[in-house]
Length: 346
Image (cartoon, rainbow, N blue to C red; front, side, top):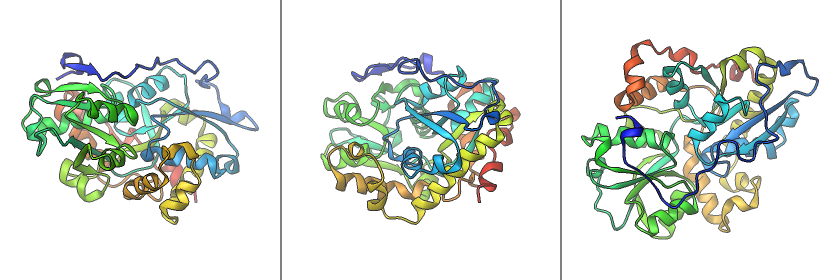
């Protein structure tokens, strides 16, 4: 069922305007930035303090963008759907967000592709309030379910889990719960019965005794159990034309991200946390380190798309998204990602 026909509520979260804070953030568009001696790129991150997108800020803090010879400006937009819109509007050059947007956009006649696959699983969990009578997705009927925003990947996954377990998407209420303190407040104030979120929010919910993890998609095992296969999620995706016109610049950025993924795979949560901005830990360094530890299994160590992953994403989206379902047989998954740049990053 299309999102427009679903019941959607806001949990006291302000909607961020797509153009907010972007007056100095104009995409290069059709310009060939490869011609510049010091190429630059603006990347929008769908929630820069989320652990699933940690490689973006870490790459900057480790100096890997600079080492690769490219000036990268990181911006943040809390909802992945809004980040996607900014890319389509040529307001940014790339997005650190979920790979599944590449599939839904192809169904809409647009071409974007993942150039670095940061994660092989969503790195998310469905957390349930202690006051809610929910033992599985089959209990979603009549419940208020939190997502980052309508059209976000958390919304996609929630719809799939409901549909797969016999609950129509019109039978529950979608609540825009955001993440972090907004999500916590929604759960504390009975704004949601359950919700899809990431670390460090997951760890905060558990520590405060507000709820528990129902479905854990931070690991390969949990993701396969919930979705039937690996679900490649966090990625760096860009407009296909931009990639074609600026291969040297894209290569520099991809190399920086691959070096970062390799660094993550050889360092401890404490060492990783030490390289991140102090305010990302929310005043609880130990909790932040635990969040990183719990999410580390989701990351790739080479930026390569996991085998069979795109097929799982297409199957999931084709279950509830009418646009994808209608064009499922025509979608060319090979155009939704490329391994060219990560293979050349060595």
